[in-house]
Image: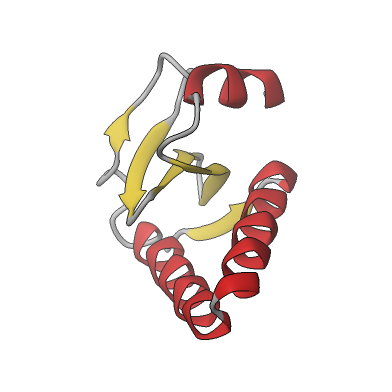
Length: 99
């Protein structure tokens, strides 16, 4: 079975997202964190469910989670979460600049 790992950029993205949401609605931040964890865990069972987004990263896949895009790649035994970005952001420069 696969496991998942968040890249440093993805950890920072998640922290920033949750901090912002928590400022406005602490309960919603908790629910959002739980939702992200469930999605990450589900990717270990169905890793190829996301759309291929090789224009952003050679092996990248993308899964929509509410207003957010989870970019990841599937390695041998790991689902590697690359970034977690709001869908309104300018994605290509943001993703490629961090890689």
